[in-house]
Image 1 (cartoon, helix red, strand yellow):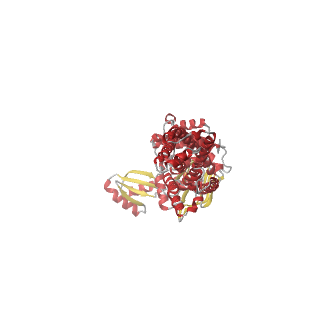
Image 2 (image 1 turned 90 degrees about the horizontal axis):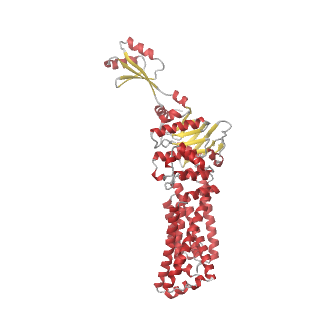
Image 3 (image 1 turned 90 degrees about the vertical axis):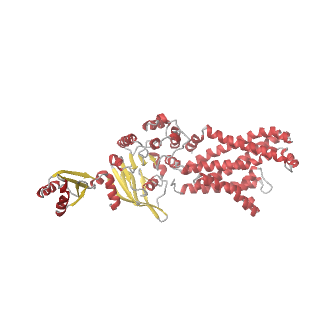
Amino acid sequence: MRRAIVAEWLKVRRASILGSTAAITVALSVSAVIVGLHELDRPRRKANIGLYSQVDGFQAILAHSTDFLAIVGLGFAAFAFSTEFSSGTLRNLLVRQPRRLTLFAGKSVVVAALVTAFVLIAYFASYPVALVTAPHYGVSTALWTTSAGVRSLFSGGLDLVLSTLGYTILGAVLGLVLRSPAPAIVAGLAYVFAIEGLLTNSFPSLTSVLFASQLDAIGHGGTIDVGYRGALVVALAWAVGLVVVGGVDLRRRDVAA
Amino acid sequence: MPSPVAPADGVAIRARGLTKRYGSRTAVDGIDLDIPTGVIAGFVGPNGSGKTTTIRMLLSFVAPTAGTAEVLGVPVDRPGDYLPRVGALIEGPAFYWWLSGRRNLEILAALGGVSAARVEEVLAIVELGERAEDRVLGYSLGMKQRLGIAAALLPAPDLLILDEPANGLDPSGIQDMRRLLARLRDRGVTIFISSHILSELEQIADWILVLKEGRLLFHGTMADLLVRRRTTWMLVPERPELLDPLVGLLTSAGYDASRHNGHVRLEGLQGRAAAVNRLAMEGGIVLDEISQVRSNLEETFLAITDGGER
């Protein structure tokens, strides 16, 4: 698998690709901070100022970014996996590495590492922005820099990474199964932002079962409807199931591209 | 690096009853073939005849519905055991357009455990060294094709499978490729080449396979195929007004003769030119020219595929 990792890294290590993706992710995260602070102008101003001034205030402000990062993780993986089929480059790769699972395992490692890096860069780049901007909106950041605040900062970063990696797995499997970037990305976003919302609105009990709800809960460190640990277990089961479906499809289906 | 050892029985590609069905459509219909090692084998057939599907099965991209196939002595369901010794260019060159030609090759080299020095060697072989740092986006079709051939050569293969490798190449590029393939064959590399340019195959192939509607119509040496060429004789009388009398004379003597733009065409005559000449003389017709026209590979191919000859 080491060869597959090196080959994938050679493919993506262009400064322009990495730089632009990191820049987009940082821009989205900083936007999420600004949007979060602007919400303070709304009726629940006092409550929100109190919430944002807690040790985990930064994560609360950044809660909006889970949706942005879901798009980045899902879209990046769906594109990276499906393009090999749609562009025909998979033919060359499979001649040099016929073990399909090994080939895509190597690709998964690189994609997961990049998504993790992008999320952490965006998270830690938006932290100083929030630290500087929040006091202008009446938010005290004193607790953010305490040892509890710093612990919360790092655990919040980990939650965001885990949540985004979940969306990345969904994007990767859709890319493998649908084998074309546009259908894979559209199907993923439609499921996450429309279909699952409709399902959980109609059947609220599904909130503790469906994949995106678990990822959303993980990204927020748990929600009222879904506990953090429960979300981790259910999301892990989903991730394993998706990987098995993707792996079986990859191994058994003809490559006619 | 891959082992240069050829299969013990000297057969590079073997298939028995190899079949691929997509629903009710049969793309490849029970083909049997044995391609010896060290030859250039041409694979010809009309569009949709099943050539690419056969190649996909040989490369393990597509699983056969029935039958068996072996490549370099290894069953195709164990691609990891033979593909490291195979180079392939399938369905045109496909590369990461945003990367340079060299980087594309480096990716494939890294994946196959091929040294970086070999990348430079194959770039030199296909004469792309000077443009290796350019993005593939800016390459002409011919340059992409050469890059595809370079990619296929990366592992120093024992078997090279090329699908329409001359597409987009200019005449000098085609000539270069012909020389390259001949050199590789001389080094013992088996080359399986699918092409629509039959005149090219006629010049370089030792072995030929003709496929139509998924069935193998001919499979054997190029010499065996060329024996089947039709020979036509062209007779030109000294006086043009004697064309019709000459046709009448030959037809009444049992020959298959017909008039064509200023000459008489005689089909199926096997070494009896003197008899025809004598017959014409006895009929008072002096022949100004007797010449033999042999059908080329394309015409022979069309005769086989139209007639369904096996």
